[in-house]
Each structure stands twice: as structure tokens, then as C-alpha cells.
Image (cartoon, rainbow, N blue to C red; front, side, top):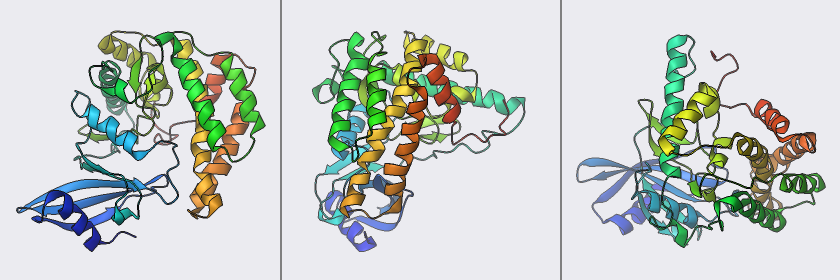
Length: 350
């Protein structure tokens, strides 16, 4: 357990003795990684920081924390809004040898109060929010991966046509490495999906991996920081729209995608989008199942690890079983109906 005195010594060691930690609190649920909001007093002014470390036994997502830090550090020099990354520690004592990343706190919230109010004005607001998100994704997806240095440490597909194949091969390797059970139905679904891999993409983009409502920091209906980069990868930008946490249902989906395409300067293949909606369900299996291993070993006894790593995974397995052999657009529709955005009430105005 992290205590105030230990945080004080840790921050003073990095920032100087004139920095005093005044308070901190842990954010929840924090199942994959532990995140603490830290407030300081610095020469009479208040500072705010985010202290992030792996949970006991390791994270759920099979991605090192340092990778997420390097992504944010690279983005901070671009037009993509992210929190300022400050430092990374590979194995500090304060976290009992677990890696730590510290970034500056951004003034805003991952929630937008009143977004789902009834009436035409609220509906118009939701569309504006969706367009704002589209603009930020277009900025991200338009980055030059060589000029920004991401190609130095991010796996880059051999060509745009190989984006889906590269992601498929990478996640199949992860699946074989981390799975705790045979999951024959998931394997069958993988072979079925392999038969439908898209063979084109508008470009190779840096993709966020998981984005939309609940994942970004908002202020006055504008995104002030794109957050949560642990699943970032280089690939087809259509993938980011496949797991955009309800952004395509905030307003008219074609209006949102059309605005994105105008800003980005390239189009999203709707058939590829259908495939990636199903593929994201498959990828959730190794991602969540990986978090079960520390529970089974006794390193992390938290019950949510069991619920997500096995219980939730079995739900995804059943969903995949429902879709095997169906036309991809039908399978994508099943996903869309099953995975309603958790941030949108059922009685929200259309």
C-alpha cells in the first residue's frame, strides 16, 4: 500500500525538495493497473499528477507500461492532445519493483454531464461531440510514423495491405502465450476470421486501440487529452472506429465518419469496419484472459480478475460462437447490438 510519506519522498527525489505532496487518492476500479491522482504544493501553487503502476502480478493487457509511456511521450510533441509525460521508472521501491509512469494531470473529466439529456438541443450536442472525437482521431491517424519516431519501437506492417494480417499474427502469438485454457471455440473463430482478413487499408496509422466515451479527458465538450494508450498499435485506422465506445451512435454514424474522412483526407472501408468490430471481440479474449494468470498463481487475489479473465471471456467465447460462419456484416450487427455503449442510457434520445 502506498502512503503519503512515501509519495512525498518519491516526488521530492524526482522534482526537488521544494515539492510537497499534500494529498492523493487512488482511482477505481484500477484492475489492470493502479492509478493514483497526486496533488502537490510547489512554491505556493498547487500541482497535479497521475501516478500509474502495474497491479500485483502484472497488468491485464499484455503490454508493458513502458510502451504506453513511450507512446505518450512521442505524441506529446505532436498536435495530438495528451497529458505531459514526466518520467518512467522501471522498478522503483515505492511500487515494490513494479514499473511506474508519472504524467501531469489534465483539467477535465472522462464524463460529459448532461450528454444524454432529451430534446433536439441535446441531440445536436451529441453530434458535435462525435465530430470533435472524429477530428482528434483524424489528427492521430494522419501522423507520419517515421518522422515522429514511432517506427523505432512500434511494430509496423510491411504495407497497408498487410495491416489486418500483421495484427492477426501478433494477437495469435499473444493468445498462444497467455491463454489459461484451450478455448477451442475461440481458436475456431480465429480460423474463420483469418479467412476474412481485409486486404487493403487507406494507410498505416498509429491507432489508439481503445477510444471514445470513458477513455478520453473532456472539458467544455472538447477533448483536452486522449488517454489510455496501452493498446496503441500501427495498423488500419478503421480499427479505432471499431472500438470507439459508442462514438458512432452518439449521432448519425455516416455524418461522423464523413467528417472524419474530410479531415483525415482518406476513407474508411465500411466492410473493413465490419470485420474489425468482430475482430475486437476476439482480441478481448487474450487481453482479459491474461489478467487471470496472476489470480491463478496467487499473486493477485482480486475477484474482478477472475470475473473478467474467465467469466467475461466465456461470454465473449459464446458471442464468437454465435457469429462463426455468418456473413461479416451480419456478425458485425450482432456485435453492435450486444455491445451497447455502457455510457449511453437505454432511454437516451435518438
